[in-house]
Length: 167
Image 1 (cartoon, rainbow, N blue to C red):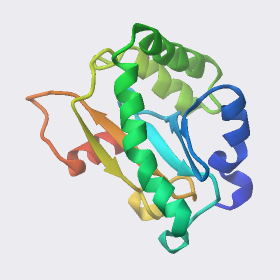
Image 2 (tube, rainbow, N blue to C red; image 1 turned 90 degrees about the vertical axis):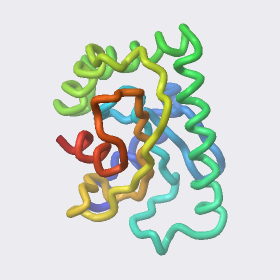
Image 3 (tube, rainbow, N blue to C red; image 1 turned 45 degrees about the horizontal axis):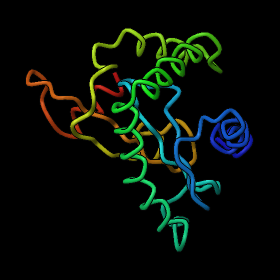
Image 4 (spheres, one colour; image 1 turned 60 degrees about the vertical axis):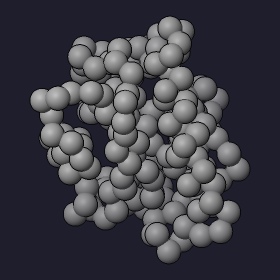
């Protein structure tokens, strides 16, 4: 998948104009996923088109890592404010109607009835799908921040989170 089909590069300015950017520094931004599998699943994305880990160097790498705890804080703040939680509902409502493709619309509809939508995360899995056989669908390096809620019936760990994410 080349740069011409990279949703992250092609839509950054639109998302910024539409106030969809949760966090931004000079080299990185974060957004709510438009194909979420759990409420508030968030992506941290370099602004520069980066496909390989070897390209993640210097200030970009530093700001990439600094963006992760900042994005965690923002997700937690969503669940501490009725207005911000209402904004999350509105995000999924709009996405369910006007998403850029059918999967985005479907996933947004599922988030609106998800039993954990109102539940504040107590933990996170952080991961990168690097390469097609690892599940990467956009050829632009990015972190996935997967909020986890307390659920004694669900096994723990990154493998479980990604198994749920990919199903």
